Length: 427
Image 1 (cartoon, helix red, strand yellow):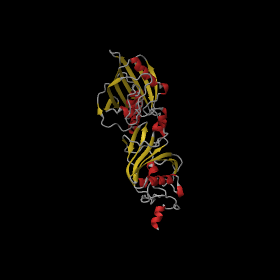
Image 2 (cartoon, rainbow, N blue to C red):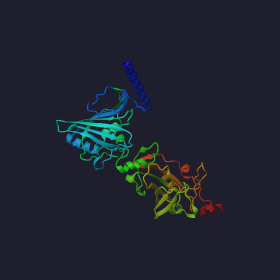
Image 3 (cartoon, helix red, strand yellow):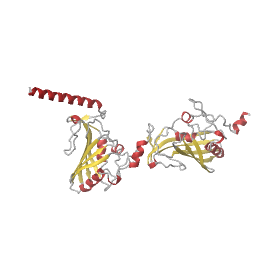
Image 4 (cartoon, one colour):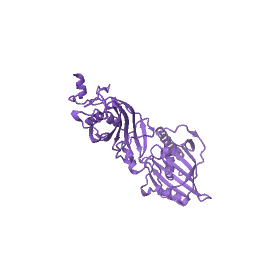
């Protein structure tokens, strides 16, 4: 009778475990692409994954040869693991802790920035004959997981990488605390345990673009509130006009646009029209959602303006640099967001366009047209560039929005008088 009860209890436990496993398998992330079943020579010092159901978890390991002594390597890893001197995890602001450290083994834990996941890391160190240090490094997710997106790789790399490692997409570099280590990564393996001891590997992610996302605590805070960036961006070198207004954004993270326009009109006429709209004369109103312009400064060849959005939340500055071109005028025009931003939705483009566009420009969706004040200017837009500074001096571009549907949204005052040239033509 007793054996029957024991068997029934054990069977019920197995059923529960199978039910838990089925629930977990149904909620796992999609696995990485191009996986292969391989035999992993897993380091014996890896931390394991005690809380992973059926050992289903992600992991990564690497071998690194340092020119530095093991003492210097351990001191640097522990300093970052303890997050000394305000050090910030460049992979999305995770939180590290050193769990244990002795002469040849450092064990750490990292909690993700969103406080949802925990991984453990081990650095097993052995001195080389040349006075350097050989490290076998391992990181394992502590919960059940199928795809870490490169996190375990970054959990290791960010604890030792040197200042020469920079993400080309955003300019974020590794920041040493005690020693700027010198090393060679001799091997790296990334993958997951599919079930029990069945392992599948995949090509490791690019360390620089995956692991170096955050340059400081302030940068992390900014990234938390930034808008989604435009799609289909390209990293390009921008020949930014020297007369652009600049900005007050943190770490230069801001949106901007610039254009070159060739006018048939004189620079005097162009300047007068731009200033008239910038001063919002004769009841002129901004057709891009009712913004408010001000002329900040005007000389014979440079006009600087400011625009506050209709909802009074954002400020951009504009410059019109004018050069006589025979009887006409060439303008290098620039608009830059003054606050930190990732996506202006075409606003900087409109900040420029709406200050010079002529009456033939009409939004086919709304029927709203540009309304000149002094002169209905004639021009050709020779070039336009739209994009954002991702971090510091790293710039990414996207195709500019169409000016008419984007910039001509709000009808201007019906009381606005036509320019004198237009009135004379109608007499």
